[in-house]
Amino acid sequence: MLSEFDLIKRYLARHSILDRRIALGIGDDCALLNPSPGMQLAISSDMLVSGRHFFPDADPYTLGHKCLAVNLSDLAAMGAAPLAFTLALSLPEANPDWLAEFSRGLLALADEHGCHLIGGDTTKGPLNICITIFGELPPGTALRRDAAKVGDDIWVSGTLGDARLALAGYWNEVRLSTSEHQLAATRMHKPIPHIALGMALRGIAHAALDISDGLAGDLGHILEKSSVGATLFVDRLPAGPVLHKQSQDLRRQFTLNGGDDYELCFTAPASRRQDVQTAAAQASTTVTHIGHIVAGAGLRLLDEQGQTVFLQYKSFDHFAHP
Ligand code: ADP
Ligand code: MG
Image (cartoon, rainbow, N blue to C red; front, side, top):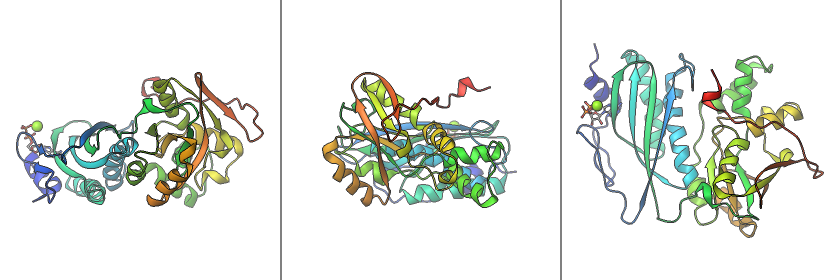
């Protein structure tokens, strides 16, 4: 039988962390952090619940990746650099095979970003994974949701909608070939947090967030917090390579409303277009200019002829779903 302490020692704790900002890691009552001098801490938590955010039989390696990826994505959306994270785990059983794969996926992504596991809690119960992540950034440089200005361009990184299309494949809403479904499913299960882009956009972008529940709904948070409205060109929204081959109607629906893509949506002054492109190139990502921030409230959708498009937009709400 694997005890709680064996489990932590064997799968999660590292012998030494070579980062001067981590004064004390796993093993005491608290971890101790020394953020870089003069830096502000950025802190965020995300909980993933079995049967709600992932299938109960989800591949443990990819699950480990995804749990940390969604938290890193929140740091990216703020323009913060990763520092450390804690992991609260509720597990139905201590299954060594599952734990080995889960920790391998989790720690591989952690290493890629120099983000150290410094503590957590472990208990028996329904599978539930909660990560709290700590990042740092110079004071006053965070990309906040309340910072969009009238006249800003609206941008999105990468492509949208393939994660939602994968879900449509699982639900038989859309018929996809096996290879198409696999490609789309990678977007759903293995999101890539845009840390480098978020950091490169400091001092250039005004507002930013990561798209977890769908572009329209998530952009709505920026609009509300910044007391502004927006115009979006629906047919400029960059569809993922699999969604790209679907009908215009599906492309519009899934780029606008599809969740789980973890791209960044941000606003920046029109005078900074070249700087935005340079930041994206530095971060090896693409960015697409998709609309404008306007005075007033609400989101207006336009086609390429400038005609208003009437589309339902609704982001995912956990309490609206049984
Ligand atoms: P306490 O009883 O003081 O809460 P625990 O016995 O829960 O401490 O944990 C012992 C040590 O192991 C602590 O440093 C804690 O942060 C760490 N720890 C517990 N669970 C995890 C986990 N899932 N991941 C990383 N560290 C963990
Ligand atoms: Mg504890």
